[in-house]
Length: 350
Image (cartoon, rainbow, N blue to C red):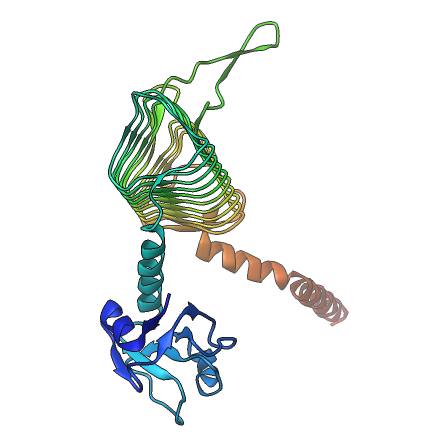
C-alpha cells in the first residue's frame, strides 16, 4: 500500500519539510532503510544516519536542528517515537480491517453471537453462548469455550485458548499460544500423602486495553475471578496464578510468575524473571528489578526493590558496592592490624 508524505503528516499531526508528494510503501530502520521506505529518528545517537540513509521519508522531532542537508523528506512532530508508534498502529488497523468473515473449516455453536465485521479464522472453535463483539478478530486455531464473552475491537492471535466463562474486554490483544482460564494450582494434602484436587470454578476477567504476550498463562480463580485490570501489559511466558489481581496500567516482563491470591497495585513495573509469593500485597507504583524474589508484601507506594529476597533498591546497590570492595577492605584491615601491633610493641618497649 502506497501513501505520500502529506497524508502521513495528516495522520500524525506533523509538518512536511521537503517533497510532500513522495510516496512510501513500507517501513525500515533509519540505518537500513531503502528508497520508498519510511523511517524515524528519535534517539540522538542515530542522528548520523539521517544524512546517509536511503529512506524516502523520515519522521523527526520538531526540535531537531540539521547539521547538513538531507535527501529525504522530513515530517516534523512533537515526539518522533510516539508519532511513529501511532502511525504503525493506524497501519495495522487498516490491514486488519480487511479481515472479515468466517473461514472454513471452523465450528461455531448455533447459540454463539457474533458482532459486525468479525473475522473467524480456519480451525477456530466457538462454544455455547459465546459472544464476540464488533470488529474482533479470531485468528486460525483459536479455541473459545462456553459462555466466554469477548468485547469489541479485540484481537485473538493463532492458537489462543480461552476456557469457559472468561471475559475479555474492548481493545484487548492476546498473542499466540496463550491460555486464559486454565485451572488454578489447587490441591489439598491428604493424611495418606496424596493430594485431592480442589475444583476451580471461578473465571478470568481481562479488562479493556490489555495486551498479553505469547505463551502466557492466566489461571482461573478457585472462586470469584482472576482479574487483569485495564491498561495492563503482560510480556511473553508469564504465569499468573488463581485469584491474582493486577492493577491498572501495570507492566510485567517475560518469565515472571505471580503466585495465588496476590494483589498487585496500579502502575507497577515488574522486570523479567521476577517471582512473587502468594497472598501478598504489592503497592501502587512499585518497581521490582529483574530476577528478584518477593516474599513479603510491599505496602509503601512507589517503592523500588531488588534481590532475592527483594529489598530496598538503593540499599541493595550500596551493599553491592561494598561487596565489590571487600578484598581491598580486607587488605587495609590487615595493614591496620599490623600497624596496631607495631605501635603496641613500641609502647611496651618504651
